[in-house]
Image (cartoon, rainbow, N blue to C red; front, side, top):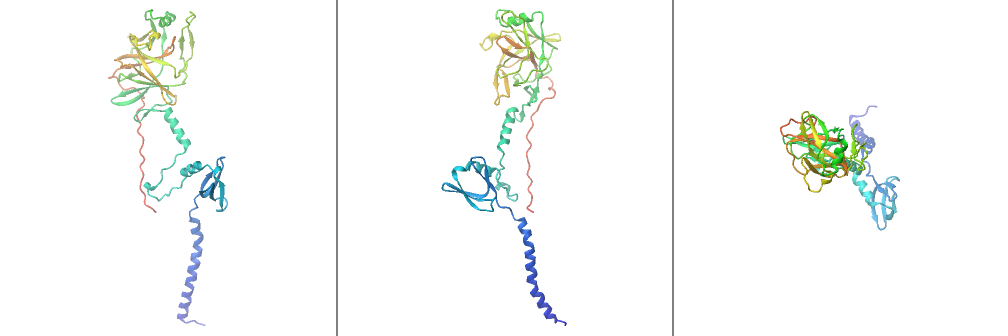
Length: 346
């Protein structure tokens, strides 16, 4: 039987809400899937364990919390068992950040304490000695120079001096006796050192607990007249240093003996410049600064091992403001600035 047109229209209108209702029900699982998860944090106990919870509050001598592990049950635990400071600290470090919130309203990201500790240690191992210029721990000795108003670090190498074998024992013996005349102590090859500084107050940084390079040796005088003993030496915080001006000769530079006992007494010694030695925080480096300005010329940094011995391996350098720039210097490195781009909310 054929239905009238008006009957078909009525049936369609009646069916409309049902279809709409079915569509709404069909969308429900999708909305539930995209709903944000409830806030979760940790309630940390004093024994080191923790409960995963959604919220908590202190009620008298107890802590009331909503457990995330047991379906949102409300539970209580004695306050004496809860480490509230650790709980708040953990929550601050793991707080959820709304990615759509304005940058000004977002909390600063928390840094893991272990990372902070590592960063502080890194700064001690590689301290900053000039703006944006840090010591490099892969080098044993660095000197701070300035070339054309730019601070630079020069990596120095130790020069193995040639001991005057004929009077070597006597030279060292004379160092201990103020009345003895100066003698040749060490001879360096060449009339100029390979490193030339452009300022008259260079600063030296020596890394501690580094073994001397191969061939490194120290000579010690036996006051009982025994022969000189050659022993390896490690740098240590207790070492002292002097800067000595060398006598430039044909294709050689000569270091003369000097009076060890006169150091620190205020008695001047020709061509010998005392230094101030400071151990930097962290005890990874010592800083050596001459107590007076150096004139143009050739010099050597000499390590004083104790009251009767010196290190035959020296760090030689020159002071010549017009000299070319040293090769392979470490220059300041400015920190890169992070630029954040503003994105529209999707």
